[in-house]
Length: 291
Image (cartoon, rainbow, N blue to C red; front, side, top):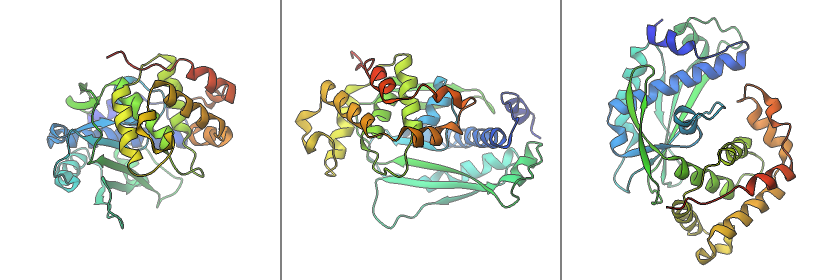
């Protein structure tokens, strides 16, 4: 086992299979990020989403995917970074394949998957995995190639598995992205409890949201004829955003949301307080950033 991987493993308590898989998933994520950094990916893009919040701002839950936004609209291909990702993973002893996702319909989101055998890659970190020998670990990369503007970035130093820098959205901009996801996530049969957990994480601090960035993202989405806001960009303001979020609370299947996020938490009892009253009370803390 690579000595840097041994050091990374010391951060985790792997008392069950779920804990083991979360640890492996996160270690591989960090090595993929190192590969992207070595390939100068962050000159063109910024990191955002739940995994960015966990890696650089202390979110206390595990996260599955790696999400990015381009800094401006420009020609781009994730395939350009395949070699950097694959060679960096291989240098730490991991065996993964990289595959760009081909979409049937044109999309501004470019996607790729990193896949590998779970048991084989556990061997790399010195763990015997006896659950499902054919099980695959999968990490999705997504890049928004038509970004709404108005976000702010920070350069963040990551020290594992070796020091490197990442360009990431700042907290108010990350929060704006999360609020947009809650407002416009369409699939009601795929409740994202992770969205609601992250919402409470921001509000407990409390973190203000980037109103300009959120408004721009909403306007961009309204161009695709989606609700809320009655497809009227003139209605986008601090008050209507809050009201739209409160309406989302009223239609939330709380038990389904708990089931979604519970497996990513060290102690699912943290969700016992969840109720419609709880989310309404938390949203009273919602405030835009002053600048």
